[in-house]
Image (cartoon, rainbow, N blue to C red; front, side, top):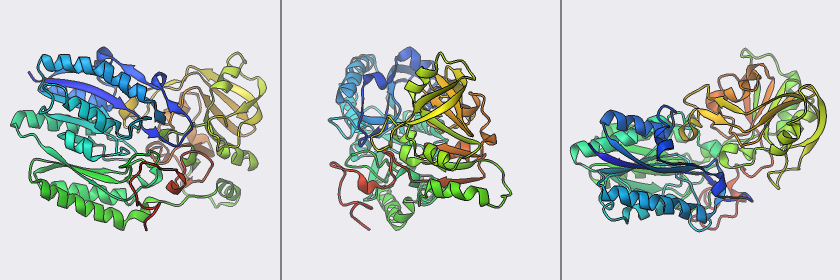
Amino acid sequence: MPRILFAGLFHETHCFVDDTTGLDAFVRRDAAAIMARRGDLSQTDGFLGVAERQGWTVVPTIEWGAVPAGTVEHAVFEAFWQELEPLARAALDGGLDGIYLALHGAMVTTECDDAEGELLGRIRALPGAAALPLFGVHDPHAHLTPAMCRLANGLVSYRNTPHTDAFEAAERAASLLARALATGRVPNMVWRGTPIVIPPTGTGTDDSPMRDLRDMARLIEADDPEILVVSTIGGYNFGDSQHAGIAFSAITEGDAARAEAALAKLADLAWELRHKGIPPQFDAVTILAGLPNRPNAEKTGPVILVEPGDNIGGGAPGDCTDILRAMLAADVQGGGVILNDPAAVEALTTVPNGTRITLPLGGRGSRLDLGPVTLEVEKLSHSDGRFTLEDPHSHMAGSQGIHIAMGPTAVVRHRGITIMLTTKKTAPFDLGQWRSQGINPEELRVIGVKAAVAHRQAYDKIMSETHTVTTRGPCSSDSRIFPYTKLRRPVFPLDLD
């Protein structure tokens, strides 16, 4: 019965926000907690399901993960390794047949811009690990590096953004490990980077360029049976890493030169379509001003104002106030916004429902924002902030599973605007977030969404129209404003056209 070591490390690091990410930000799972994830539809669960069907003995070690935020303190990475290393050594002493890693792929620490590559290198250096089949899964917003591809036999990216297929991608990676164990043919990886860095708004796989690149990847797999998987990586422009940006990998049992030639075609297509990776954005005030005069559309539902500048899934604080200010200026009736504001929630804890209170809201998490908005509000409700995803394929299921905790949560109303206040940053990727607080999002007229692309799986189903708007915040779609120091140069759009 094959023995497979499992470990997980998950963080998407925004290098240009003021905060750093410390140990207290990470959810740390031990062996028992890892095995308890069976059935939560995460990428970890995807691996565990294959392991169960294959009859493997899983050797779980540790799994650490945190929501996107500032640069990770390097001491966190070292603490992770100090805990993992003795567990891995003991597992190797007992005999292992393979290694499987659940990763994000975009962790940057205060001392290392390729944390995943460093982790793989340390694992391979352990006695008995150098030649073991090593497979894993990662996010397409990773910084895919040559080191990651040199040290692994098969890292598989999700194919979709929004990430509706994280579970399936993990199954695919684990199935490749099963294939290698059954056949004795252990594949290798080929890497190809590009001089292209695009914002999250350009990485949606329903749109060009990522749709076209994904389609070409499937054709490459169909044309060459020895190329098992081709991954198309949109990258993450908020990470100051040498290899940030669009990249590709191939897992092949055949000639590396053939795989390299195939990836070169993908790189050429990416360059041809590079401008489509920077979609337009609009002014929220202008959009709201035009709503009263807009003719009735055939499709009913809320107007969605997408705010990538305060994209929670990209590491922003989730409390910037530009959308709220625009709704106030337009006196929107039926508006809805969500702010991460622990201080406001705490101030409302002992306030009875139905009470009116004046308090500052939002505006504390980014120096780019104008600051808190002080409003008289009516408290509508208070809860523990827990909910279960309505959609098991939600973008957040891959990392967090289907059970979500926003922390203590309060809902207030100012004139026609309903404001949800959370204690923990919670990306707006599932409509269950609203319904858990007794709010039907379909009945709202305008909803502000602090996201870039991952919200689409939920909100595209109910919206009448959607507009990506420019606001203050640390997740600007203009990569040219960020002070990169490690990113390879020249790249588009910073230097090249």
